[in-house]
Image 1 (tube, one colour):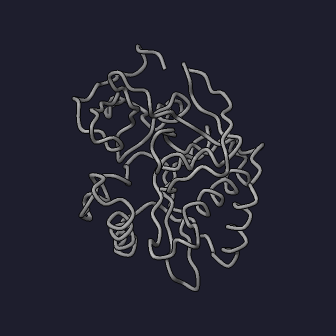
Image 2 (tube, rainbow, N blue to C red):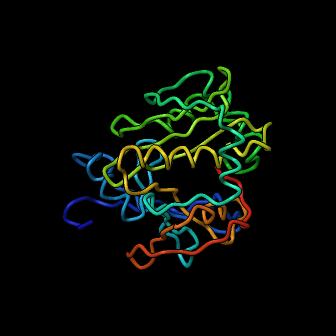
Length: 244
C-alpha cells in the first residue's frame, strides 16, 4: 500500500488485549478514505483486519507477537482430528445470512464472551458494542450460521473479498465444548472458499506465546506474513488453543 494512496493513523498506546502487562497500538487506515472497501481488499494481503468500520493492524513498540496468518485453501488437508470434528457435526446445517443485528445473535455472543473470554476486555457487552465491533456500513460481510434442529449453535462473521474470506470473529454455544464448534466453523469457511474459488481464508493474527491463539497453526498449510512476505509455517495438530 503506497503512502500517497491512503492515509494511515496511529492510535495511542492502550492495554494489550492478549498480554495485560504490555501496551499495544495500531495503525488504522483513514476511515474516510474513498473506496474503503477496495482499500480493505488490498489491505488484507498486507496484514490488516477489520473491526467495525475500522481497518487496522498492530504496530506495537518492541513487540511483534501478532503475526497475520491465512490458510492456503487449495492445499488445505484436514487432520484426523479435524475430520472427526466434521463427522461429529455432519448434521449441523449452515446458512449464510446478510450481516445484521438480531437478539438471538447477541444472546449467544454475550454468553460466549462471558464464559470463554472473561476478563478479556469485552465483558458485559451491550447490543451497541455488538454492532460497533461486528457490523460495517461498507464491507461485504456475511454471517455463517451453524444450526442443528433449528437451534443456533454458532455464528462466524466473515468478510468476502477477492483476496479470500476474512474470518472477523466467531462465537458459539459455550456449553458444548465436546462439539468443537470453533474448529467446525473454520472448516466450513474453508469449504465455502473452495466453492467460491477464493484462494485464502484469513484467520487474523497467530500469537505463538498465547494459549488461546496458537490453535490457528492446526490448519495447514498456514501462511504467515513476515517482513512483508507471505511464507509457509509448519504447525502441529497437537497445539492447544481456543478457536475464537
